[in-house]
Image (cartoon, rainbow, N blue to C red; front, side, top):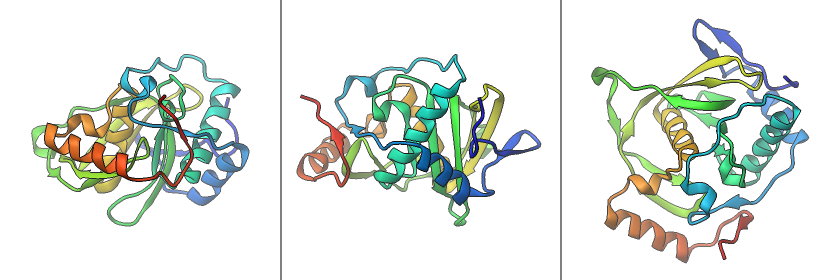
Length: 209
């Protein structure tokens, strides 16, 4: 079931997620409740999540909570398993490299395989709310297309460039049990985990003990 703030206009095959961003994000967030963030080592982060099969008020409430949690943690994207929920859905509130804001939610996302000519790699720094206080360079394509479903179960496609493309890839990875540090070399992964151990998260997290 759709609630205020969930719908985005569709332009050709891709949703338009750049309109009324402030209003849509605020509507979700004000209905939601911020939850603590699960961190690296928590079992729910290291396995593929279950498909969303029921598109109801419960899903809408989860997405509201995810937007509230994302804002509380000052993130730009959040997957459901990052608040301990084993479902394939992520939300985002992310700028692209041109400074254009994108806000939306995707259920059951699948990252589209890019043709060779579109695979231009960007090796910018990447971080993760589930790996707090740590960052590392990671090469990812600077363009991404994710296909999935909206909160009514209707098919949607989202595309992004630059930093937003990185966000779409990062959040889709989460729902299949991968964190960005799983794509790093052994040495870089060790460095990231050291950064995490030495830092203190600025938001509430779920202890792994």
